[in-house]
Length: 331
Ligand SMILES: [Zn+2]
Image 1 (cartoon, helix red, strand yellow):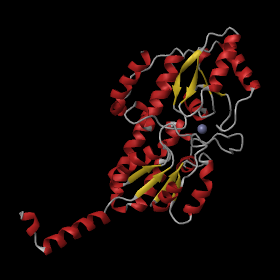
Image 2: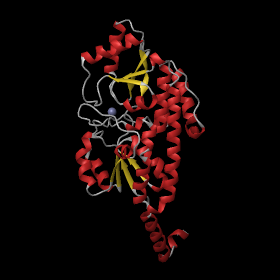
Image 3: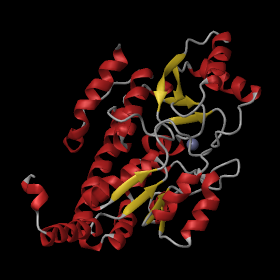
Image 4: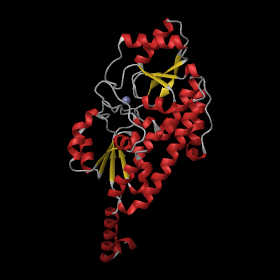
């Protein structure tokens, strides 16, 4: 018999109590709906919070419906963090039901309520355009209410949560300045972004880029022939060199616009894939929100004839993935 088998009963009991004490101290779970929300919770929460994300890369939040196992996750969460402004339209019932028993935080709504940058009106049943994460400085306004909500469920971590919120704010503000600097390198007549759905109104306002969606804010409606011809006309008239597809949206509409513009002798191509409503795959540049906006900046600037500036020191953790992303863009 090994020594292990002779371990006295009191030692086993002591070990068990240690393990159960340890389990009791495990961090509270925050269930985030989209990747952008989950990444922001993780950035502030760190080790103090167990962050779980409902929607993975490439999932469209406008259309996402909760499964039976999702409902269990809502039930078990210490805090439910979602975007709000109707982005997760199909989850309204679940959010209302579990919002009565668990604390919730609508992060985009909380960010907007902090001021001073206001919201943009929506269309097609969206009173407010919900895509606030596209404006890094506006999104940073949500860090204070997020810090407070996390501190309420992990009070022992108050100091760490405050420090992490401050660090993430400084990074988002550095990103905000870099995006403005980047977009400004695009020659003025070409400083226009055309993509399938209206996810980029905040991006356009913040970084001085004219934005045209082809099918509106919702992704559930198809663009009509008139929409396609109207946008094709703008491309031909302005000499826009590239239009963009999105990772969560069927590229059919963009391809139809491309064909219609070429019939008008416009020299235009697909300028690449933008991240609109979901993060990219793990390991890639767009695996987190800051990387996603850097990736969008690089894709836009490169396709529309600008020049990508170096990242500021505050964003040095993204430097390596940025370089790989740019190398792949050239290939
Ligand atoms: Zn959207």
